[in-house]
Length: 180
Image: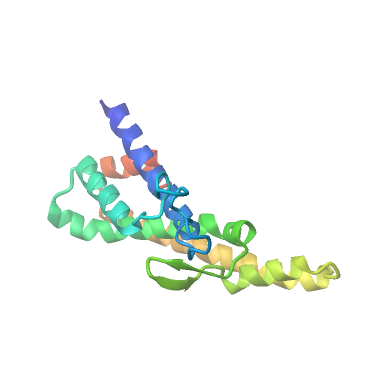
């Protein structure tokens, strides 16, 4: 039974992280008429994906699996969501600009810049065939500093979450991949 719980929680956490990281590309403005609709008939796509609803479902399941009261969950949930957000930010540093070209995209009805300037500056200099080490090095250093900042924010978010967890809850979230 415990293996089933850990497996289910790990799967839930992994699914949410995957969907959250893919959401930006899925929510890009419709330029082809059927984007996210799976072609004619609108079947099979992610056109109606609602990240807030998905987060609510996952958080509800996590509350049940961790056996947390509603009062406890009101304190814990923002901390768990903070770890999810910071985990995604750390994982996405650089990946989005390489995969999607950076810039801005529509997300949940508002435009958000998704490529940080440090990432975009490094990407831009690498696109120049004439860029030498003296051009690349300062941008690479800025990128590394930005990435280290995001990793420190994730570590801080994880520590804040640990403070409100029992040892059993912490162990469950470590096995699920949310904590280290």
